[in-house]
Amino acid sequence: MYPIVDHEVLAPRVHRLRVQAPVVAEKAKPGQFVILIIDEKGERVPFTISDWDRDAGTVDFVFIEVGKTTRQLAALQPGDELLSFIGPLGRPAEVDHYGHVVTVLSGYGIAATVPIIRALKEQGNTVTTIVQAPDRERLFGQKPLEELSDQLILALGTRGDGMMESTTVAVRKLLDAHPRKRIDRVVAMCSLCLMRVLSEMTRPLGIKTMVHLTPVMVDGTGMCGACRLSVGGTNRFACVHGPEFDGHEVDGWEVLMARRCTYADESILQQGFQCRGCSQW
Ligand SMILES: Cc1cc2nc3c(=O)[nH]c(=O)nc-3n(C[C@H](O)[C@H](O)[C@H](O)COP(=O)(O)OP(=O)(O)OC[C@H]3O[C@@H](n4cnc5c(N)ncnc54)[C@H](O)[C@@H]3O)c2cc1C
Ligand code: FES
Image (tube, rainbow, N blue to C red; front, top):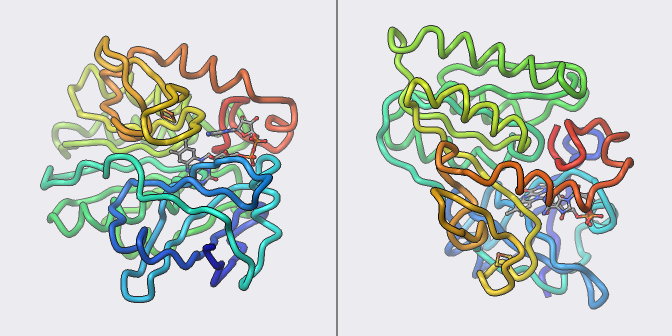
């Protein structure tokens, strides 16, 4: 069993859980995820690791309440236990010295990208971070981003197109200054539709754009095929070949979005998410 050692509410419906899981903490790298099961009746649900402490043997993840499992998780308190907590899964995010990296974050990506930005800074990169949120009430996690990033841009907007526009306008300004103020790479962990738009914005400029794709997963080890997607004309499994992919090589956006929407319902839209297929703002 995996005890919960801390539970913090970061914003309405946004929670951070800290779980005692020494084996996961020992091996975790930026961009990797876990699959947990709450109890014997629980589903397997993936979450991106947002921090870890190897000495204490703890692993953090941040989640947004969207459905059954995330609502159950929101009710757990320190002392409660998870039945299963498997990880770290997936390939770590690519990190090297690139120069100037722009990161675009929303929803749980605001917290889950922090280890990637930390690693990028350790490699001597300059990092500009754009954070998208529907409103100030749901903005969280600014402090570590301010400390780590050379520039932090807040893109606040209303739900739907307005929210997307608040971010694309900020990105467009940075792209217009390129190559005078050069951008060497973009890393995006935000809604599927925004990652797709960003990839198209950077494609003509040849700026490599890494996107974090989260199709519905079941086993998380490449066995079931649930998370299949097409990248560079080849079938890939997000759980073992990703979740980070080169956005310019993803040629299955339509399929990816259609499959995500299959499991969506009106309650997702009502919660102010950007579209049905996303549990991201
Ligand atoms: C690799 C990976 C990493 C993830 N990391 C995080 C994270 O750090 N924090 C976080 O809050 N969420 C994360 N997600 C999404 C998270 O797994 C889903 O929000 C969760 O499965 C919803 O479960 P539920 O039972 O609460 O909702 P359900 O009742 O199962 O579904 C409610 C709605 O959530 C959406 N949903 C269902 N499954 C997924 C999915 N796999 N991805 C996205 N949306 C989904 C659907 O639109 C559905 O209508 C990640 C997903 C993947 C694949
Ligand atoms: S979740 Fe089964 S192959 Fe990726």
